[in-house]
Image (cartoon, rainbow, N blue to C red; front, side, top):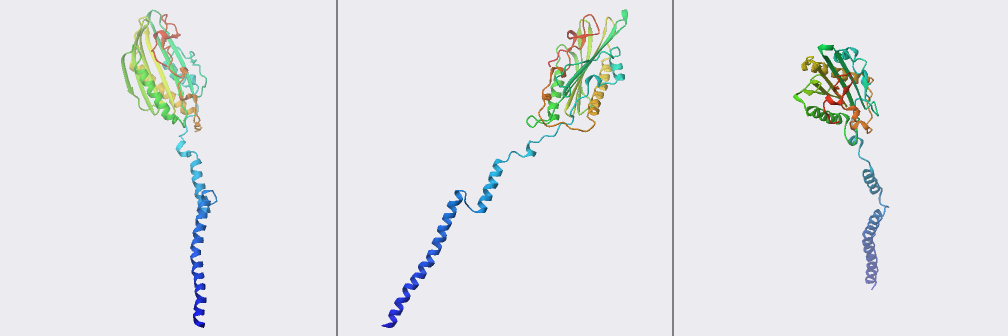
Length: 298
């Protein structure tokens, strides 16, 4: 009778051990469930918190600087328009008009400017020779929204060339690219007949980095004098355009670059566009008037 009682006493002990062993996984599982539930409310593991911080940092970060940045414009300012050409050049283009320089109105001279000269060489009964010269400059800043200054300048350059090629009343129009002047240059020439005479117009449009230079030069033989050579006028205009490009580079020779802030120069102003007064009045005075000029849309 003693042994059976002994086996009966061990059975409950074994049962307790098995029950206890089975309870351990249940407790671990419960602890795991509790941990998962806590992470959803912001009290999870350090790894979860790090992941959450990384996601938040990514979502709240602004676009990268490299994605938004644009190349700063090369030139930060423009030369004084009436000092763009040397006295020698003016003596060749407007020999009787060295002191006739007239600066165009501008609300920001570092972004847009213009200057014009006129020359009337009166030979009495032998007639007269008239010359008119105008240079306009327009500078574009780089803009994170609109693009780089060079790109904006190129778009305006294309527009200026097209306008020069489509002047109302022009005859014998010719257009060709010019090498060796700035980054891009086009010369457009044509004849324009007015009651005062036949005017030979030369327009040279040049882009150098973020600056567009439009040079207008025309000449006419008045009161019976013979018309000037279009080839000579074009050659003189191209030489002057090259000098204007050098003036821009010289003015910015310290190497400073423009800021990337938006600028009012992103759109052309009337004062920066070629003037409409490209030829003399009916009385052939030294003051140019709009009546005998190239009709351009500014």
